Figure 1 (spheres, rainbow, N blue to C red):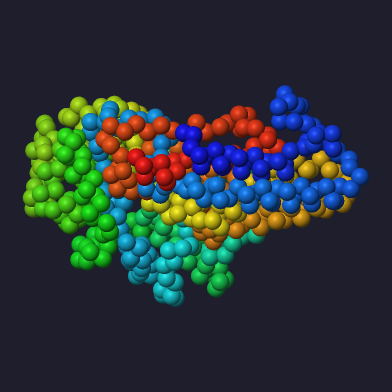
Figure 2 (figure 1 turned 120 degrees about the vertical axis):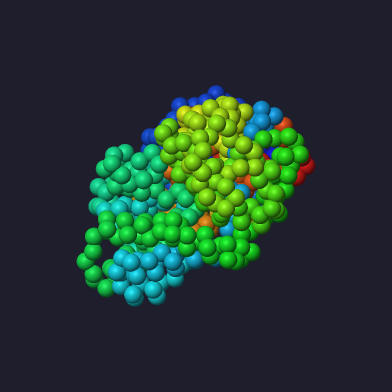
Length: 545
């Protein structure tokens, strides 16, 4: 999509790239862009005054970056856009399926505080943990989703798509673990496959890592870190595996004992946010004759009260099938569990289910029986959920459904990425990285000292970039330069992803989502030619549609 702004941005990129051109020695600096591609040259360069030459390149690159930023500011990212990993046309979708929590319904931050406090009290009252841990409170700014927890070493960390730990993001309790200790602990910064979490992110069958993919896991990570912190600060000897299990069980009990459900039902307006957006999405799909269904792990009465608040007492008329307490991901794999009908009083009936009827609520069951009873197979079905493993993985890998991931964090991260400070920092960070790659051919002591100064500056900017998103762990989607392990799984299991279902309101029901052709590393020009700054979809283009 060629626009005047894009053209201006391209011109700015070329200006910034001018400072990086050159290759080996002065002769290479005189080459024109029209020349055929030259072979890479890594031999040591010589120049009469390398110090002056390097700082001239640095200042030139800095000016080019400053010239480039305004054109990027004219092409901001749209936080309400839908992003595509795989080409998909909504005109092919006849049936829409939904998870409930954090898909149809969004919760306020008060809910995480509630879960944290309730689980902390269960640790004290039922697992006999010291009452002093009650002094710890939930911090919504501590952890991010997608982190890994080493159960045996009791450390929380961020891992990239290649199983490398991002140094500086490893926490024991509430304190960062020094890089040297991390490297000694793992004999480097790479986590072998056999130590990673299993397919569903769990620490089982010999895996020592747990990946926290659920939005509900944020208070769990916080509680683990706080109790670890208490034991460490008070020099209490403890078994990390037992602590992990006790915290996991306490968080689970907040759900299965109904503590969370009763609290939300008692003050539904405090906890449920943006009901009008969900109502608008469901109404739009119904107006276009789309079939809809709900599969959730939450209980019947809880879902009923929430949907009455969001849609109204006749909410079940919108859905062709409603399934509660489905126990995903087992629902997608276990063929043995039959459906049970739930009557209006919440009582489970013993009748054999021969048909899934509109307006009724069913419990448990399995996807194979669901497919048999509905005939809803293949790519005409689009299912939305917030948990990449429990909601989406099996559907796309085994059943051929199309999948949509709800990633609430996406909206806030895109807003940060649209700020001038972030754009300025990242643009210069990329330019400086290219400058380092090109100028490393100057091997004399004075030049190497300058390059070390630049590396120190680059390290500082990487830390600054991380802090834009989260002071401890940075972005949900990136480490210093690589995609996170979270993004790797998101890219594999979700055809499309968005911040909330309300993003569907910006698109026609026949819209086709086309993934951007992301350049492979060998398809990109050298740093010295043209740093890539293409950032789509842009705000103006989405608004124009």
